Image 1 (spheres, helix red, strand yellow):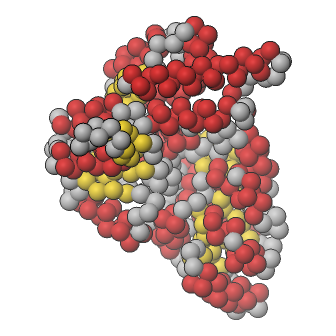
Image 2 (tube, helix red, strand yellow):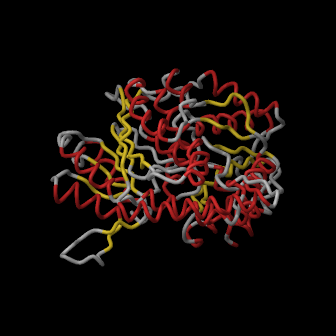
Image 3 (tube, helix red, strand yellow):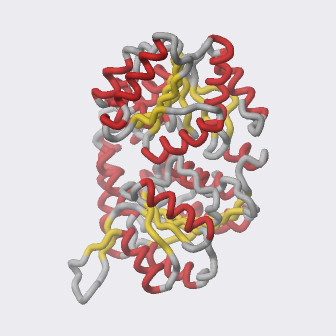
Length: 457
């Protein structure tokens, strides 16, 4: 272990419990709580105890490969970065595996991506990995997808999964296969509340912004909700369990409705109103959905713009707020430049889609405006944990969360909606309760609780 790194008590317990579980298990820890360091501590201990020879780290995205490489270097490791073009790394990996087996090299670190793991280039090499290999699945919930799960090497016995949210949304079978491979959740679990209390994450203020649907959106929403209700009623009549999360027929309807909520046009008005009063604030992150927003542009009702572009236009062109975009298509070199500009204040804000949900480390984020409130608990937790990472001079974070109010529904549809909303609203309420302004945040959510008779949350 590097002298500069001291494990916290919960990390030490997690490491000990992983060993007690015979070298298998999943660490379920809040975003920013030090899962990476705990994993490298396990690898260090394995090296000292049994002479571990290979550390294989599998990440969902390219930027996480470079982040892991930075952490590995602190431990004196020189990883092979096995991703993108196979010609860039395959001969290097083959050579080091040969050196390892011939005794000319003592240790090998390989960091790869999920997409590279599936490919023949890496799969053909896995059979040469020695028995003393540890595989680490970062953001392991992604590896529960069938094709990825089938690509995980069965020959590697030492396994560690890392995720703040290992349970897969809408996929109980995938969740189970994940735990079957890596092992069940290791104690102690480390929640957002734990992380804030122990100083692993900063305190925060939480401001829910309630948004109404437009008339056209409300009509579409009502139709979708009625269809969902009919599906559930039909299942109940056939004595089939009416669990919407396990119902394949309902998933497309639920996803359609989620996209509608994510792209609600009035979120843009809410953003315009909010940021026109906050033009001096910096270090602000804007989370967007990927649905479309219709706008009356150049007197044409046919104009369709992504919410993402609309947000950039409002902030940059209308309000003169210094922003840039951060997406999955942004090259790695440009991401580093954006991160530097964001940290030093050259940029006041970053407008992002998805790629900031998992693993990206920009602790300078002090404010967030969440325009895509996801019903997926994993995204919900990842997004909120992302801005709570500590940073010099950062005492507290501030979150503005746009929450769409469902339209008035008939009684039958209302009951379905109430059941669907219960889980989602519980997450908002829990997050409000942990905020420094909990009373104010809860009062804002009270209107939604009253409308759907969910005052027990």
